[in-house]
Amino acid sequence: MAPLSRRTPVSLTVRPSAPSQAPLVGAMGYAEGRFPHAAELALPTGGAQLLVNLDRDVLTRTPLHGAGRTAEGAAVQGPCTGPAVIDPAQQRAVVWVAFRPAGLSPLLPVPVCEVRDELAGLGALWGGDGAVLRERLLEAGAAGGPRAVLRTLETALLERAGNPPAPDPAIRRAAFLLDRGTPVAEVADRLGWTARRLTRRCAGQLGIPPKRYARVRRFQRLLRRVNAGQGPPDWAALAADCGYHDQAHLIHEFRALAGITPGAYTPRSPGEGNHVPLPG
Image (cartoon, rainbow, N blue to C red):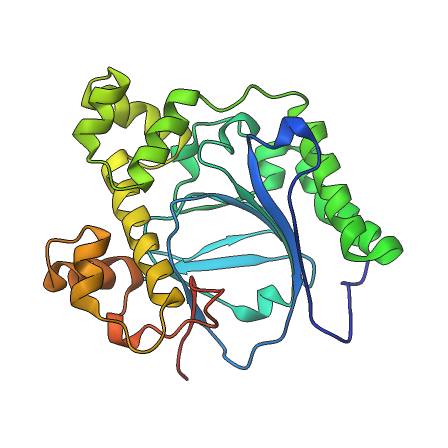
């Protein structure tokens, strides 16, 4: 079946309508666009996504430090801990699902840490149901447009999970605290766990050890502040506000998690802070 084709850009984001999906899925969306740049950085969020490329049956992602990943056009993007280069051409027509913390776990046959920093094809993860999902979405789009695509995607998630158990409330609590800058040792204490137990449970359900998750989420807090501001950022003030020791610490962490310096950070738009076009 031919890829979907439209003359004007489309961006549609919805929340799951099925109550059983609300604890798992934060949002899902459909987007079409054309971009002038040939490559861009995708920055880590600590979260997982399901991606379906409706333009071509392929998805690729190349970490700045490591081998490239390639999968068929329907895949799970596991939680990422570092920056990667992606091809904007693969976003010409794409459907995505953004999972809540630990929300991917009930939909996987393996611990979430096994897909960390990976593109895992749905055919390998879900068998026949995953292998035909892209074709189902293309057929839905040809008949009913973007909203029909999203309805079909939600139906596929319901078929896969049925009435899944809600993510472990303790892990959701841990993610909530880490996201707000609570020290890892304090998080373990609040849950009545040892540090080892917290690390094991976070790796299995969030996909990322708690210290790394806290670093990535602090970085995301910083990006939100930068993109919400007016004028040039005051990096020293942002360092203090976002939990960095000082400006030098912020710069070091920025380079580690974005692959660029803070001064080189120019996202695609303020609302797309995790997509940074690369020159050339």
